[in-house]
Image (cartoon, rainbow, N blue to C red; front, side):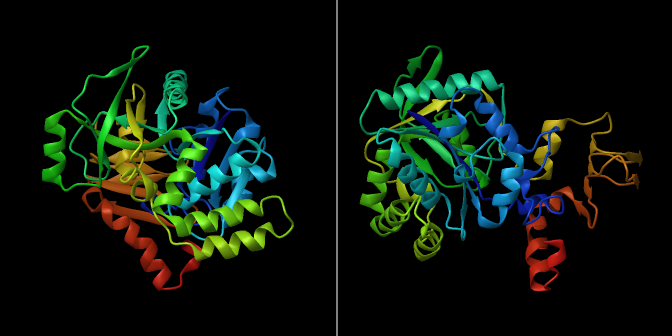
Length: 361
């Protein structure tokens, strides 16, 4: 059977001050009325029923996630005791899925991407599932056609072979995975026509990923096996904390994808996709006014161009004579920054922590 795994443990520090430790990006409504995690679940539609959906998040966020997803059973939202990257998260989900379904197929996705339209997304995932079920040792990922030589995404290189036609959706065998490149290398990737952005969405059999972790990350696999063995027992929380804290974090790309020697396919995603990684990405999605400003909330701009403004209808932001800025107002904090300094926003959280200004984290 098909199971869905949603990874919801990120902190979204680039979206400070809207994103906080107890309400990070995936719990915010950044592009509409619904939170990003709510949109992620809704997007699945009837592809996966609620009783085969597992959300892994930070332990401190379990209550907030339950409020966002009230239809899920309490056991469907699992709070990790510490951050250990994506491989332990995915491996644990696979081990838990196999408890009642040894033949489980998993579709794995982040909780904070903007994707559409929903029906095309589901159709593409179904084709990925079909591709996985046709082989014994297969992994499917979804590549995004690069729009520009981005330095913030990992890349997937496909083999120089003809596409596999999946009823109008193209799939290719993967040649290799590549880490985030510098600008020069990204431009080279783009010029070849063989590279796609790595969407971070995967389909595989639970057994395939666990077997791979057993081979490539045996210590991690042992800890995850111990956690899964305690699932449903009274001492589960204690075992989870002990074993998960003891393992060494790895990304799934490093732990498995770059080392996997089975069949790996990349589907050329026909749906729109954005990982909404920073405030400028939000401007791309919500659009701009004739002055190039992307605005959410009540704003009066005079001689204001190329800026991103976020507030609410109760708090007016007035800008005069500014260009290329980010202004974000929340109940207890306001950010003003140059768009060209967007990368520095994540340093704000570190600086607040150094000062022990925890009320604003």
